[in-house]
Length: 228
Image (cartoon, rainbow, N blue to C red; front, side):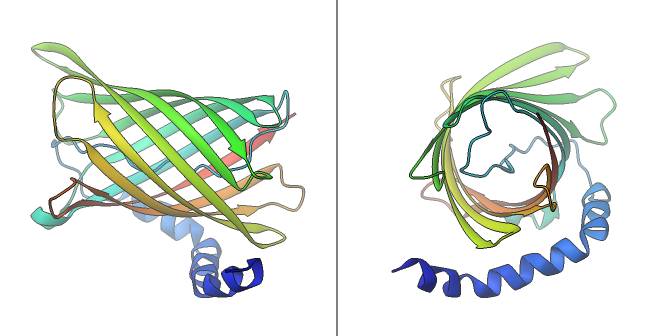
C-alpha cells in the first residue's frame, strides 16, 4: 500500500480525532470524573510518537488517563502523569515517566515509575521503546515494589501538516514471577501548535491477557511542551 492510499485508509480516524481535538477540554474533564476503585489496574497509555526530539531539546508532558474493566463492566483506576524527556541526538531520546493512580482507599497508594530510551528509524516513522517500569504499592502494612519490562513498537503516519496518527503495541513482562504478562495495543494522535512547540495527544487502547478475553479499554490525553 502506497503512502497516499494509507492516508485515505485513515481518513475516518482523522475526522474522529479532529472532533476530540475541538472538544478536548470536555474530553479531559471527563477523564478526571471517571469512577475510581481501590482495585489496581496496569497502565497502557503512553502518548508517544515515533519521531525523536532534536539534540538538546527537553520535553515536559502532563497527562490524565483512565480505563474500563471489560469483564467486570466498570471503570478502573484513573492516573495522573508527568513525563520528562531529553533528546540525546536526532534518533535517540531518554524519558522518565511518573504516574499516580487515584483510588477511593485512603490506606492504599499506587505509583508507577518508568524509564526508557526511544530509538527512531526510517525517517522518524518507526520507533522502538524498551521500557523498564516499577509499580510501588503503599499501605498500612508497608510497601511493595513490582518491576515490569515493557518493550513497545511505534509507527507514526502524518495525516496533515499539523497532525499525525500513531499505532503502537507493547508487551508487559512482570519480573516477580507472575505469568500473567499483558499485551497492549494503542491508537493515538498528535495535534501540533503552529510553531510545533506544543501538542495535544489523545489516545485509545486495549490491554489483553494472551489467550484470554480482552481485559481493559484504556483512554487518555496528554499535553506536551517542547523546550529548546
